[in-house]
Image 1 (cartoon, one colour):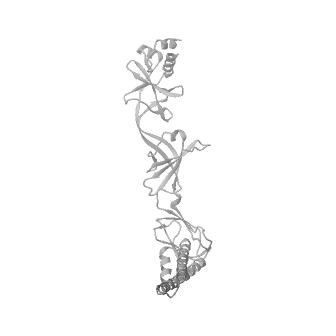
Image 2: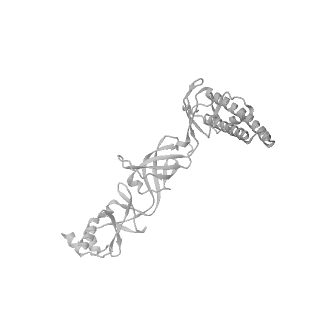
Image 3: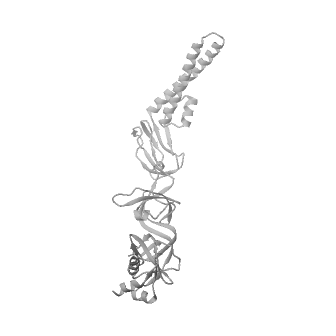
Length: 352
């Protein structure tokens, strides 16, 4: 009854300013505490797995059946671009090469025939129809050569091998598959002498490429982080580059991806404990007792010369004893930390 009587004596302006005397403040048991300025907020720690983009996980294989002649690397060995990985012999490749050489020879012969027919036509010896037939045969032969080259390139040849066959008209008995990029051999799935079916993965290589942290954070946390915020794990850091807008139905969390700046020594597929830190402005740490809710909106009561001013705030982070909030405060501001429900009742009494 005493508190209610005191509340009726408190004058509240339309701007949520509560005028209250020192005596009333003492009788209500209102105490204040100075806010703490926050320049960074930390969330976590969360389990974070190191990953690569799919394009940086290289599967080594051949598009045709083959036999393994030799393997030049071992599991977990480092490779440089152009290093020999594996040597293969393929009867299908040999067949394709023979077809290619035959197509090249045919093309050369038909080109000579066409050049002869052009001369004969210019001399009036053959008809235009015969010239067109010769030209058509020449173009068809060029098409067969082009298609044959395409088949060889799709089946494991490169431009160097193709040029060798084209220039010498000799078969390449075996081919060496070379490393496309610098990286680390993660797995070897074949042995010397083994027959390997087409398109089977013989070796897997993790390329030296950007590595990422993949972590899942609660929705409440995800709402307070943005692209460019940072993750820290052990002695490494990463910049957040993607935040999913799809929540996991069971865990009510979202996936976050961060690019690791210096990935030296960081293990792919390893799970680390990572924290998220972000720089903030207009953020302050207050005791939990400083917050009350009016119509689901969190508010605090800032101390003023004549009483208190109600301020709406945004909760950025909740800890065991404190909230980190975004509010229109100064570093020297004091807020009520006890009997805040009495101040809230005063506000509600004004609206009645």
